[in-house]
Image 1 (cartoon, rainbow, N blue to C red):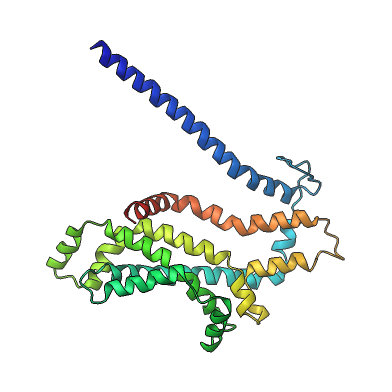
Image 2 (tube, rainbow, N blue to C red):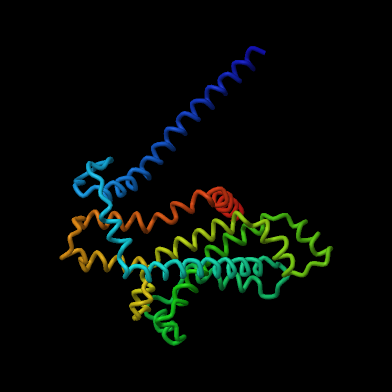
Length: 287
């Protein structure tokens, strides 16, 4: 009896030590990630910031006013919003359909189709063949050249299939007994149970599309179809502040640009975080 009590007490002390060490370690990781972002925010507000300073000596909103009042940035911002929303919706549609199709074990040629999809995850044609292919398809100067590739990813298909496999097979069988067609099962059973995976993959697609840069440089000659990131880069490189009365430094402007670009997802992420964690965890375990 005494030995059991000593063993329980030792186990409690061990768990307490683990919790303390784990909390300290995670707190350190949090600081490593938060401090650089906070430093960027401080630099965007303080025109006199030099070196590492974690609190602004002076607060100025000139850099944000410069970015947000530039009429030339309104259209690119709308382009970024449109491409992000369109790629996310299209990507979720194509990803869920592709994952559901390759989940059907009775489908003829299933293994060949899966191998073909996984092959594209390891190999691609390269920049020049891709450019020529897009040109021959007539997608130059077309926003679909950004939306379609950003919306469909092999990794997302594999992750979604892994999540679908975690749904009990008895639900599929019960739906079939009730007379549901494969499309009905997909719409009435699979999608309602896949909110965590949809949220996590939707976030992947949205972040990737929002930060897309190279497709606009390579495939867009129409200046009115450039996205927000490209125009903001031009804003800095062309030194549009020269000759104005605004006293924001170049580093201050660059920091404000980073904050403006990151801000939308800093607002969105807390609302999808609970789904994001579950969706990625289940996909990782099942995959």
